[in-house]
Length: 441
Image (cartoon, rainbow, N blue to C red; front, side, top):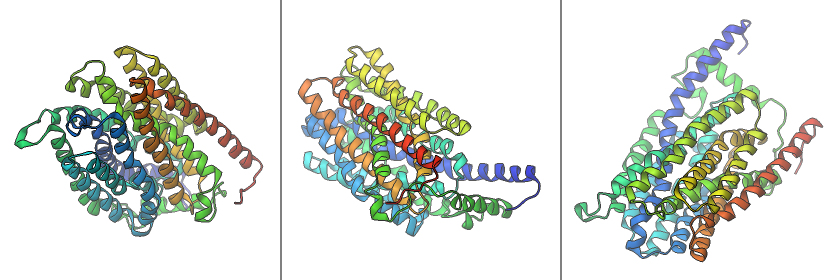
């Protein structure tokens, strides 16, 4: 849209972005919040369920990790399906199916049925997060993305902040109508997910060109702004789909994301048991478990806004990763409750503050033709390694050492590797941009 009056253009831009954000982001945040309440409630349920089913730490860790295996298998196909069928239908499909499968977890009666339901849950939820990232890239210009992604992803720590006390209360329903508290937890927390999945069919619009809720000048500005970004300088990653899966940039970005994914996923599953090992009650565990997530919810938004304001992604990604590593090392050596909670706060602040700048950086490095599959591949690998592998590793180390804290040491080592990878990767990418070279694979 060409306007001679710069102030008019600025007014249209501000009005359009504000309207898009308020229309899409709060709703998607609530959807994502429910996704992570669903993903993390197994940690609170384990306080009763593991005893009922006779599951050891190793068995519980393996069953929990199967979610990430099927998530990995189905992630890229799901994101490509979203691009083909549209976000309105596909996000609704994801939410409805994962709500039904998660509620069915109340029916598990042994380790095998737990394994099956966790595997099916990962397949049902696969593609939701990268799908929303892709969807937001259809609506949000690049200069706003880090703060929007960070705001959207507040739903992750907020899920545990809100979900832990709620889950602890639901566990108190133990014996009501003949069901255990952990069964009520799975059933009642899934009803809103299915209802919001149905709401997606009415509230989401696939592309700006179809948005009847935008005024004509707003629609023209947004379509034009997003189109101009596609005509900008060629990005690092533009290649056939199959070669994308072997590209060093995608694989390195996936390794970097594994650091934060491992910290977030492992603590969501194991942190309640770690805290309860200090002699807390179930309710005390639920309340204290929410504290690190409250800190993360506040600081991740500030960090994403700061990254956008300064236009800097590299160090805004590295600094949170260093915070994760320091927090993990310190927690693994701590033997008392208060220092442990403080260090867990540091780990989770780092894990979630990382996300806004990192996904803005990753989106900028991917070409428009590669972004759907690329984002899904990065997230899928990070979930497989960070969730599928490291959740298991935690259980193995815990069984071998008897210490919930020492089991965090492998995560700390992984963090140092991820920091080194990101520094080398972004340095190589910056060199390519300065010399105006395009990588051909």
